[in-house]
Amino acid sequence: MLRLDHLAVACGTLAEGVAAVEQALGVPLAPGGQHAAFGTHNRLLSLGPAEYLEVIAIDPGAPAPGRPRWFDLDRFAGPPRLTNWVAACDDIAAALAVCPPGTGAPMALARGDLRWTMAVPADGLLPFDGLFPAPIQWHGSAHPAPRLPDRGIRLTGLHLTHPEAEALAAALAPLLRDPRLSFATGAPMLRATLSTPKGEVCL
Image 1 (cartoon, helix red, strand yellow):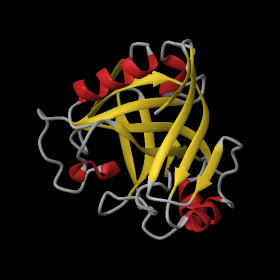
Image 2 (cartoon, rainbow, N blue to C red):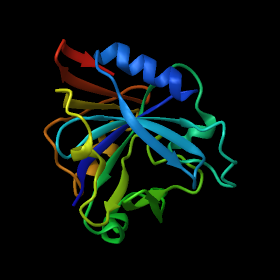
Image 3 (tube, rainbow, N blue to C red):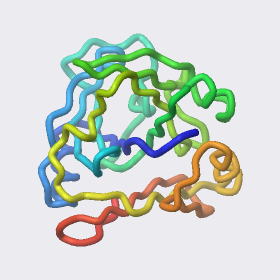
């Protein structure tokens, strides 16, 4: 019902996040855009024909959205880091019926020719301290991934660490099965393993 769509690296400023990711991966990020509904902006990186990575931050030039921003960005602090992941579906209402409470309400969003509906929690924080994926449903054929320059970066593993790792795995089991996912018990943390032209890199 769900399939991995994209990863989100949060940062205090977009420039800081872009510099950190470009240094770690050794490739340039592509332009992204603004999200007027949440007062955020991003830059993007292809992870293949159907997946991508976004570096996202509060846009200092945008008005406050009047609601908590997605990915709990209002409370973000510290260095740039991978904080969230987003999983695509063909029917977001059906997906949300199976997701844990607090996954959010569907919001219709758009940027340019991109149209999508995404689940956004009322307080900005997804279940399991943000480690549960945000469901997204893309409308039409337009998607960011295939239009991005392919820099040869691929996601090979997504590692989720949480005090309730077994419950997190159980919540995902009826929704998404991806051999790249792994779970461990510990303090909340999301880590991605990527194959790059310079070798394996963890974010």
